[in-house]
Length: 377
Ligand SMILES: Cc1ncc(COP(=O)(O)O)c(C=O)c1O
Image 1 (cartoon, rainbow, N blue to C red):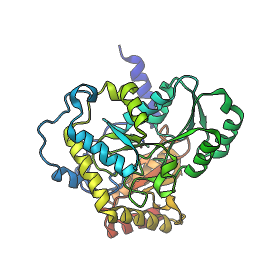
Image 2: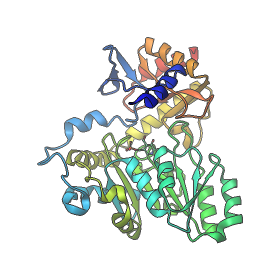
Image 3: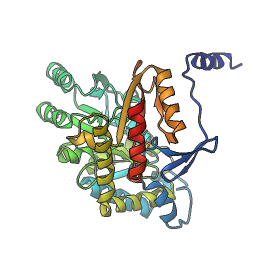
């Protein structure tokens, strides 16, 4: 009955591309794998080391689940407070919370990109934005990664054909650690009456003087009216958000299907989000440390150490062949470190890599051992 599916899986297996869920246990900055090996975790996105702290610090809640969509009766006083804290951090008029960052990205792109609109989307955008663009009624053109010149050319040639134009991009690209050319995209948006929409998933809490993300770090916070983020990475919890003008948030509340037809964020996750934003406000030393570690590792590996990108705690080491990346990951495993090998289709063919994620909780010794092991690879 399932032969066709099984054949596809067999084919993946033959090509060394079959993926499996691994059972692990997370203990702060350590990961215990299914062989009970305790490894230093360089694979998570807990950039500020908040996840463990939040687990013990969130107050008791009267109900686990929100029990309904926000539009029915799932939006509590605490959801409203979290939304307000996010709007304060982002310095926007308003914000709304989604069950996941994926839902926030896909739902926003799908909802805003209306008929007669154009979406310009970076080729390496996260799957959630890509899926949102696919669902949108707007025409979508994918431009080469970070190629603002192509964006400019398309706008010069075709702007007149569309009502609205949305330029949609990750601010920090999750598998590359790159930062988008946000200033140039904002200039183009000004020139051609387009709107830049940025997914700050890997930058919220990490970049910028107040920790609001790459838009802040690059000085374009007030030129990017709609910013999407997640509570699930540096904020150590679960959930997503969109921050922007009140009218945009109201439009999403009325039209965005993942918001309307999904149960609101669970109450413990809301509490964790409120606490995490408080930590971001009051503990800037966490983002300073992880930024410093990122620069230290880049410098040791011969990378650039200036500019916003050097402080991004995602450091890819492109290896090329799938098996070579898996072997490199295995060698680090034997040295007690978990550094995942990322292979196609997550990254382009021939660009399999190790992806190192750093956390403020990694101690100096862990970082020195990582650098030493990476240099020997
Ligand atoms: C760039 C980017 N956007 C959005 C998401 C989705 O966020 P969440 O994990 O909260 O669903 C991710 C997570 O993998 C991501 O890397």
